[in-house]
Length: 102
Image 1: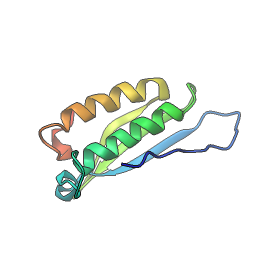
Image 2: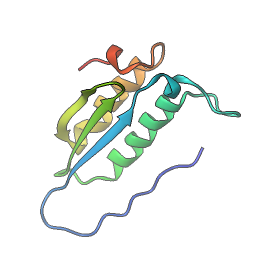
Image 3: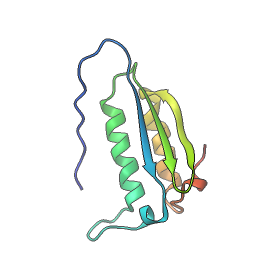
């Protein structure tokens, strides 16, 4: 599995980073040679990105399938990793976004 590294331009004002996460049925499958589903790997990558944000930055995750749902409302970067961890735990058994806590 590759890890995403983000480089952000130095800015003085806080960033608001919004991610759209595909929560369709195909995301519950596993790619050859991978032990985790695509949705689980995507959430782990979002956690890696959250760790790279500054404390004053904010992050939001919107899931989509046939409609959109606010999976993780806008929150401070320092809280994003914890909230994403909750989504990751929820993705353990059922991968459709309708089962995630909102």
